[in-house]
Image 1 (spheres, chains in turn blue, purple):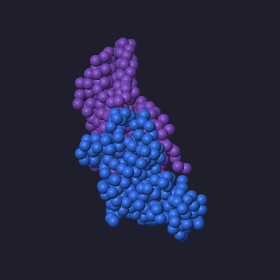
Image 2: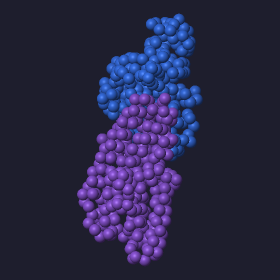
Image 3: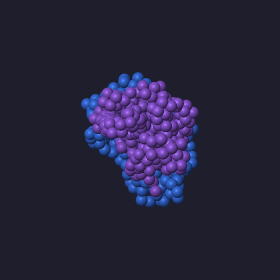
Image 4: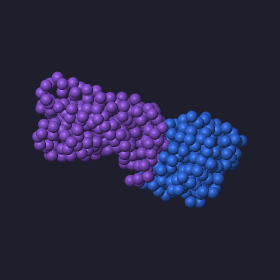
Length: 247
Length: 267
């Protein structure tokens, strides 16, 4: 399996605080990797570094074999993301926002691509509605449509289903699975919904205090560590990370 | 530099302005008020001084040129503030957009908005108060160019200050033109200023424009060298402004401020 994301020795310090402590991992083509961990574990810091909006203190990031540090624009042209804390500007309509970001990502056959995504994410009725007046679930769908604009090789999703109802969340999971399987993209997915992670992810990385504590198949990892479910394992990571260190 | 990405920044501003009377009105309302106010002041001065001297090209022309500079500067900062207000930095800077492309987009947006203001001022000043731009002749072109470039430079510096200090710092930016206007010799000759203020004035490109403007009106020769110095200072100011913005941007990327901009600082 070829690699779409390769992270080596990634570290971020804020003074004496080490937010991310020399982590290394990769995401393969057609693979969905879950980045899990309690609040403050370093997940969003890691994602921000991969997005190029936070400079690492050490380490390297390669997107589709392109070094983010030296060829930032080129690497980011192959990347996209959606996060609940980064809604698109509320004072532009759905179509306007998507068009602006399509230009920023250098999308070809722009009009055709926009129509396709408006249809795929059921946004047609909201085409001329300002993003600021959409429900949080609708805004999430717009964010996901934006994330798909450039058919990215690497898709970063920070709790993408956090504000969706169960039916919409399932729809999004299906769509992301199809994206990974059909379009050859790799996905790095953070979520606190362990049911969702188990259903969607091929592999998970448990992050605690900036380090990768555990990695493996979400379906077998809990048993390997004497736990019944992924949620139980998550709680152990959050409360007693030392018990798992070196496991 | 990708033209498509620059166009995206301009298109965003176009969408915002097109859909909002609150953004359209300021493009021409304040400059119209200034033209009307100063137009009547110059008319009054023409009436009371009895010297036959025409204050219209001197004062109203100066106000027009100074307002143009302010509109250029605010054209850049307002376009930048739109991204501040809508908390758009994370979305924007996680794209392939480069700093040069972003700043180019802001400058092009400013050209469009300041051109509207300039056109409105020209119409009001000419139609209502008889300001004839034939008085300045072709010198109007370098006058506008020097002021435009300085407006761009200050707009970029203002944007960098807000990027560094957070959204509340925009209140540092609005008074900048008023702060520099005494040194820019908009309404009086350079020789009026005390010596130390003259030194400061000589570092500001607009002072060369307004000195030249008065020379043209007085029928004297315009110092081409003076305007060239003004243009040279402009180029220097723009280079320094872009360097300053780039440094502030990378500081924000290093500290994580871009991703958590609403926090204003991470300390």
